[in-house]
Length: 273
Ligand SMILES: NC(=O)c1ccc[n+]([C@@H]2O[C@H](COP(=O)([O-])OP(=O)(O)OC[C@H]3O[C@@H](n4cnc5c(N)ncnc54)[C@H](O)[C@@H]3O)[C@@H](O)[C@H]2O)c1
Image (cartoon, rainbow, N blue to C red; front, side, top):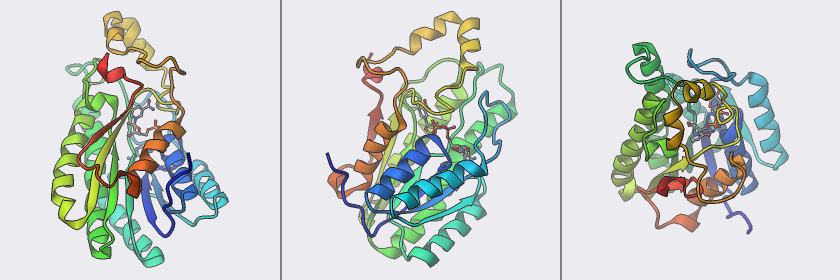
């Protein structure tokens, strides 16, 4: 199937340096959109068991977008930095004159039982995964309304934003929070022709998805493993980021014009098992 046509549109993607964010940038560019990309490109959460992205990762995303024949405006901005995101959007409007698509993708994952994690570990998770999305919304929505072209906002939650799992309750709380934010925003933005939907990936083949620190949690608490079934489809256990991008590109396009305030699974049926 050919990608829908997004030519003339501009997409703002957070967490764009690698993993799913990079894949979304490349696929949106392939469909014709110019890309505004931000990423912290640095350690963001003290308890993460996997390595942070780098400035070189973000530069590679820019190269891949330009390879698709599209423009890329990229900066090192942490989603917790509300002013930084406002500034980035202002720069994007100055350069491109419009903003049509937002993919609020930046996120972190780390492990610990709820009563054992520190207040700092809890707060860092909520600050990045939930307040970071709020900051993205606050920075981008006024520009989208002003451009008066409608648009599509896609938040990246998780299967753990629909079904709570043990060992990462703070992550689940942040991703359930993204769903509430998404659906309220969808109702508020309907009159402006802006749609808002959340995507819910399960295990995806990225540095986060390959985080081996979760194995210690399962070794310490073997019964927790029952909450993580392989899903209904007999495909690779970790999905290629490109397969999540199929859904993101669809939601960004007019092919999904009737869909708003929806929670779209990218989970191989895991949530029904
Ligand atoms: N990988 C999985 O198995 C999986 C499953 C479900 C949901 N998700 C969600 O998908 C999204 C993308 O994750 P991924 O798998 O590509 O992980 P990843 O770690 O490979 O990439 C995440 C990117 O976000 C950036 N980022 C993190 N915190 C940031 C911050 N405060 N400010 C700016 N950038 C920041 C990182 O630097 C990194 O480049 C996340 O929201 C994640 O929670 C991932």
